[in-house]
Image (cartoon, rainbow, N blue to C red; front, side, top):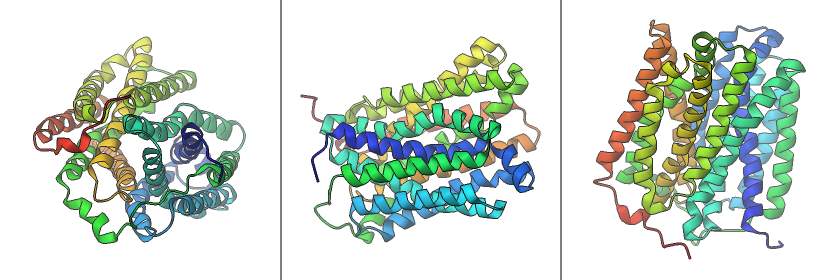
Length: 394
């Protein structure tokens, strides 16, 4: 294979994560169309979100452990083929059950794809660019939230939701071709062993970050799940105002993601504490800011920046700390984030259903985020700091 630059490899990986991000999140703007076309209740279509998140959490690590002996390039090609097939099934779905099955298929490749691409990106990057390589992979997801999801929702609403899945499948084909030509034929020095990989669950540094994501960062999704109705009910926005707000959330997400990508490994803990503290304050003030349209736009941007300014830092901490599980680390990180997604969204629904208003929900979300930041402060006293030492940029 002809040698290609690191930037080209990362660009192809980003196209793949963009497509996956679009698949995961675009359905939030198409639930009404699904309900009308497939003759189900709107409440039922919410399963397309929860089933996806839970499936990523459950099947991601299992798929990766079952494929440890596969070469990274071959496995990426297989996972992308599954992604293409799942979106073709979605585009052709004659009923809701088939559409739900397509989501399940797509979810099985989500975490392993992210994990593999993050691992390969780090392997081809110099020490001082390893964190930024993780941010680049996550960047595809954030760009999907900023551009792909609003565009897909618009196409689905004005034309046909099936066209959206055909578009995503086409992105999958582009990714497949790109991966075939640019993915390095990288193999670890030793074939990973299941027992060694599973020992990561005894690693106190990894367990600490998982705890923070599940019990702290999940607060993001408690609030984000209801961002659209909050903008509608509190700010009084219509379709245009909501679209602009969601776009600004995406702009903030991209900005926060790539700014955090510049953080060196030895500064990860300090920056993570600062970012989670800032995100907690943003959520404390969120519904107050929504009371004025101008501040609502600012709140949307800051919410996105804080959320995705935190994500690459947490990803990096898991991957750097999981020295005994180089194959499973990235997949585990992606799976844990989807578990947090599911927990946060479920908690928000329960709180809303119990009569707690939007202000109450965001205060709970803020409390969870601040709890996560405090846990990081306490945990930093016990973590192995040698795992995050980084040579200076030359």
